[in-house]
Image (cartoon, rainbow, N blue to C red; front, side, top):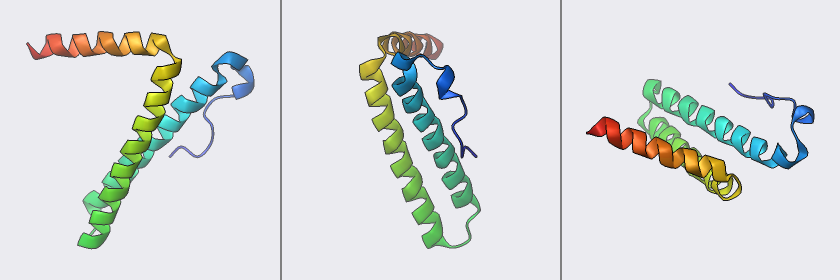
Length: 93
């Protein structure tokens, strides 16, 4: 599990630090979603299972919050997301 910043922010250009922090936040939230969903899959107690899945859903909201902010700040990411959508649409044909 992610518990420390995985990169040395001292080596990141000052103008890129916030975007890197946003990406690290997204990674942490994805890690949390995976953890909660895995625990829910093995939980015996139905209330605990429901709680874990609810928490995982909240983490997905957090991912969306980070992504929204990142897309406002990183126009290249917006362009790459559009390319990715097109590639997926092509695969679905």
